[in-house]
Image (cartoon, rainbow, N blue to C red):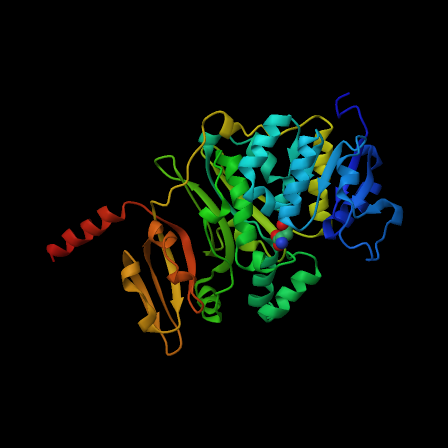
Length: 417
Ligand code: HSE
């Protein structure tokens, strides 16, 4: 019997913020004909708002139960999650997961498992929680038309930036609040240092361009080094600072991809994305820009995406990884130029030689900043810009074409003065 005629009998791993949300939401959606048979948890002594008989600490009980036809994996530990997901796929169970770290780090193996066992593995909740961005990239956008993705994909850092820069909360208090609200990872460094965002970008790149790239290979940084000086500068210019995951198809067809703080001006749809909300602007050749907006973290928003995956199992939906399998896959390039702002503790720390061109600089007793053009491959191969006390923020519309031509043109123009 195919899964669409059957009842979905779920073995759930994890009963944290999202697991609890799913449990509650499923009770309100009888039409889905889905039932949680057992929940595997780590700490049996915790008080939980569900009957005790539902819980076990033995994963085998769920994995070897032939009546369980769907495994929903919502745990924190990426290594344990990989074990559970691969075991479940190998035993022919459909799998729904929210574990972006596990998926991003094991994509090649997970692709092979799906092929080998021909079972659905869905993970819409892993990117931007309530925003259905994976399925849209997978189904709607043809590779050739997809020019770029610009997204705020981490709710916690966006929440912290809003609370610190708008409400003048301290960084520590804002982070604590994000943790209390259940937005942050249990290791909040993953949020703050841009790791969660780059995990999500790596998943999006697969569905957008057929690129399978380990997140560590993608240039990324978080909000850990941002300074009050940067916020004051942004305000003067009418910008907001956001942590943006960006992918852009360049003229030669290769894809530029990174997660970095960016200055965003009021014409950008991401400007008004605040608190734990996420936003994704998709640029396509024919339709210009589309903007997806919604809650990117939290119990019910994430559970709603898990629910939508469960519902998709009803019609035997699987990711086809069209761009990867149709041999239209793109590849990542680091060969381009970006306009960036970098602020430093003192003027003597400015590494002039790291810039192709410095266009503006300003210095005060305590802090100085420069705006200039960098060769992205040099940024990728160095760490100076990640040091404590240095903050690098991407300028709006940062891509610079043909810098060599332009430098030469300027030099020849000067020769006639
Ligand atoms: N920690 C993540 C975030 C949770 O803040 O976006 C949702 O993936």
